[in-house]
Image 1 (cartoon, rainbow, N blue to C red):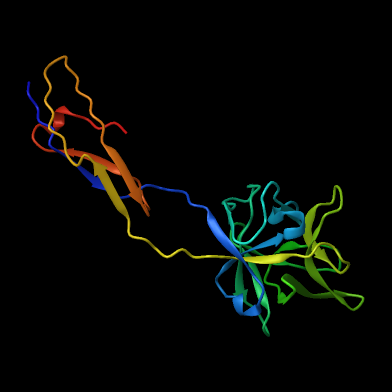
Image 2 (image 1 turned 45 degrees about the horizontal axis):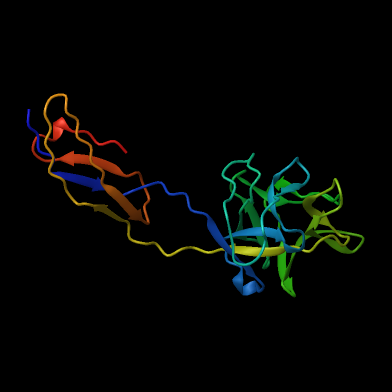
Length: 231
């Protein structure tokens, strides 16, 4: 039996999991409704993670925190990875902080040192020397609560305090410009023949860029059903 392998047809794709890049913001002009941010503590090398319990947020470890910052992020509520916070326009110049993974907002409902999940809450964001002041509308003894990082032993967490803990900073997600998906193969085609009990194997190198879905390999040509592609 003689078969001729005369071509390959490709559909572009490839589920490439890219990390996101974030840059430090130091001005209110860099606050944009709908954009994603990380709340970090540069001095302690940590980033806000998910809700540990109903009263405070966890933190990441083993991540170098400097701008620009490239990192993977959490995709479900149990991931010990940085959690993105989306800014939404609040009242009177304030902001709502939305946790998309949990489908709730960062909120504060009392005068305890808590940072909770719940309904919309107005946070006023300002900057001083590169640090971000993320201030609640709730105060205690005349001092407003702000989101800070507690670095004390066995108390490490992101939460709300009126006392001085570790300052936090905001890093904004950079949206990459969309690229054109490309796929190339070398060589572009092969002519092969086979006989019973005589297997023939050839290799074609496939490379791609800016791929957004799986690569599909299809053999075409005369007697193509006599051959199969194996990734």
